[in-house]
Image 1 (cartoon, helix red, strand yellow):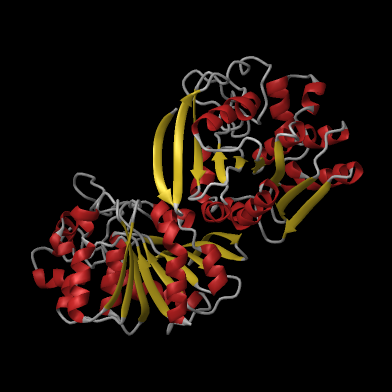
Image 2 (cartoon, rainbow over the protein chains, first blue to last red; image 1 turned 120 degrees about the vertical axis):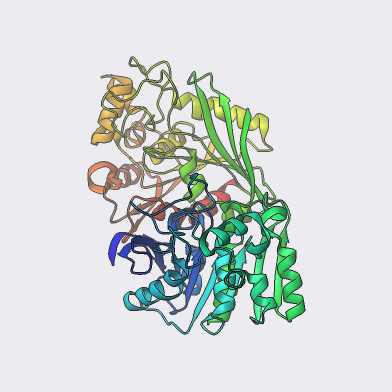
Length: 275
Length: 275
């Protein structure tokens, strides 16, 4: 693990690190904020389409509240990158680079590098545990948009590992919306059973459970009706008895102005559950 | 005035606007955050070398505390920009584009466009007063690095207009450091009397007064000894009876990680003085 940068911030250290990933076969960059008095608890933040670790690190406004609550905040990249990594054939923003969708691709030419599920759930947690003073028994996960999809599917799948799960404007049912249809088809092919493992609503329908989920959603989000559809998550959670707090936020869009506004609420929500 | 973007944030509106500036002869872009319950008080934030309005707007972490205190936060650009605007002949970062130093240039070829003193003290305040619900009797000014220089020189010169003045890692004595020697010489020529009007330490030596100044300075700032030299401001304030609070912050560098860490303290300090 190579240190790209470390800067004092809010009494702690905001670091950016790079390592050679076995999962993706590429170098991967991520950021970690270590607060001044770390409790050991970790909050994973998965980013959305087009983002790297840098968007939330620059604009997320999480450091003050992490310093207050002792949370260590980890932000991975959203896809493999580098020479030879295949991209969307048309260079579209919603597939390929910056758009890994937190799955292990099985389709060619993506299967070799696009293994973001394994990267985020296995390789990077092991690297963090080996290099930072964290308590693997106290992990929470959140994310924005495509990263909210990742947080929900990973949290639902590994519900004993992630003790708290939240999301900002998540894609809740990728099997039912254009972004998801393109991504799941492109990375996983036509195997709809595989798709259901990467769709939060389908996972809940198929029996996955969490005690509670917090979701904030901008009511004026330009992607609300076409791509995000939080009502599908609300229905699935109601049917399954999952305590979903879905807050529709009037006036808010899909940007980091929305994420940063509600970041402190999410970090505190995780801190309460992670101790 | 044209609206570039407006986004809900922390209960208020973060706007970015553009207008044709008479002072600079170019289009100028700036940002304004209007909190949910504006008190009318305005805080001007002047940015440092290489920055536009966007750096602090993205990374400054000022919106939560402005929402709490009712402060309207205005962030201008740091220089004229556009086709035909002369730049540093070598394209250096410390002169020309992104480096206006908040002076009205008298030297050619800069005199026509590089009129940032007039822009920041006259034209933009009039535009803000005409377009936002603000109280011109309650203005404070702050800034970072070159923008800290601007905040101090403007605050000292117009001490009845700006009721509160603070700075993050300011250039306090440009006549005595390389960045300032290049900029004052390049924009103002060899007229050292003109230089003294744009040097906070010289202004204080020549009789300018403020009741109080707050300065935060990273003790590990890479520019501390060579360009910033806060001890010169401390000496001048001590001699003049100005109540300077100079906080040396161990471990902090010159970046926005430093600025954002202490932003809330500065906004609250201004809010106390602006009512």
